[in-house]
Image 1: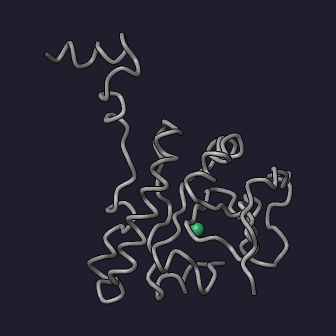
Image 2: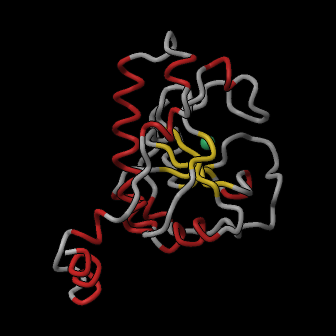
Length: 178
Ligand SMILES: [Zn+2]
């Protein structure tokens, strides 16, 4: 049986569910990184629901990407968020609507740029890579601008040459009314 389990997927790719199960999804444990214990007073039911929703979306990307993804920052209770250099005071990490995935070589970002249709379908928005050199920030909340890829703040980008800031605006949502 052991032989079959390993040989069948490679012989008949796509016909069996086995290869999909082999893909390791991003888990809630990885997202919370133990903080559901240390900060359990900050963890509301709404936040936990947001996390379920966010991970379902991000795992759609994970499945399509087909390679491991490492969470570099998940849930940040407000007290932790305030200690993170450069973090927005109202960061979506606080409410379980944002996740950072490690991307030191820029390969995940490059893949995202080639797969914006999928990211749009998953209902995710990305911070502009010029602000996030070593990670990719995904969030399930639409920014006010409606832009699929948005600047996290109004400062000059810390790494202006890392990305050409070009993508098709057809992936943007309608801006929110003020
Ligand atoms: Zn982030």
